[in-house]
Length: 495
Image 1 (tube, rainbow, N blue to C red):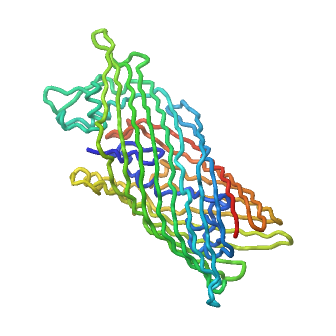
Image 2: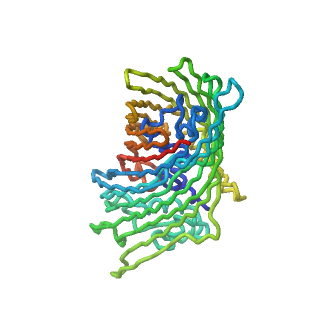
Image 3: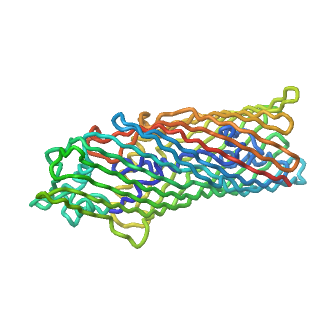
């Protein structure tokens, strides 16, 4: 059974039967890094415009450009976290450098008296960054071998799965009984033995979107815009999990090392539409909607196990690994549609000019879905699709996300602040604690060019389990507190 899809793009991804819904949820959530100005006000641009970043949430904002513009931006994800297992905490950090924005807006002034602008934008913008490293270690009861025993029971050796219980059998972590359909292990009489365990999880990749937007301003009162989005997904993950019997409490067993690697690529398509209405010259309202994104995803997943044990006084080592497939596994994911509404107020006090704006975004994560049988006639793939989609209905939820931002201009200098509240996609709130994300930035505007810088901080608390069991109370629980910062720099030229 090709259950390689289960590790896609999640900070807490594990095997299909326990965490498959993260495949859908991870690429349904956006950081909206984009331009530094956009990030500096936490993306609260739904009722505003004249910034490339607005194309990702409300394409009507592109109509507010009065001059053609070219932008180029770079960002640095600065991830740090503390992972705790049974009271033992491990700190770690990771950083990198990425392209966040490359775009051009072409403006025109139609001869139509009522139409003030008709603009076209071609954009490449970052929606999310997945760069992260998590390390934890501690001593707790239980073993991953129990997971493989549960998967193997009732199957003949030639029916064992390719990615977990099969390699476990080859490495002699599980042994078949005389009835040929039940299995035993070194832990049969000591499943709750206290073991030293740890894991290193390394992730990289981005979710970017190539977009084409057309937008128009009617009588300086009403703006509309529509856009085509083509998300581009890249993701790589390596997990190295270990268990050791330092106290020699389990007969025969000494240590195991379980390694998983995953490389994912994919692309999708969606459409967006939005409007901005100016109630007064200073007060405006914006609304937009984005269709579900249909992704076709290809991933290459592999596992390996080294199992060390002592038998008759001799140290031994067994190995097992997943087979090498000629082609990656392909499947599709459909993310939920999303809606956004915002208000903005532009003010002037003496020599100071600025705005304050707020957005609310609605996303129903239960509306996402996965199809593992996209290019497969295997009935198991369809059954697994149904299983994960049922999990989405039962475990995911609909949410409201809030964004608030302000900009203050004094001459050529800009000061920006923003805050957002992002709610986790799970009905069980203990799996993702919502937190306030803060941002700020500076900018300088000349007649024909500008430069902006921003810094955003996104704290979050999550619960992670390296493997799932029939009874969740016997699973390992790792509490992860993350502080994911992002530094952004954007250059722009008007022409």
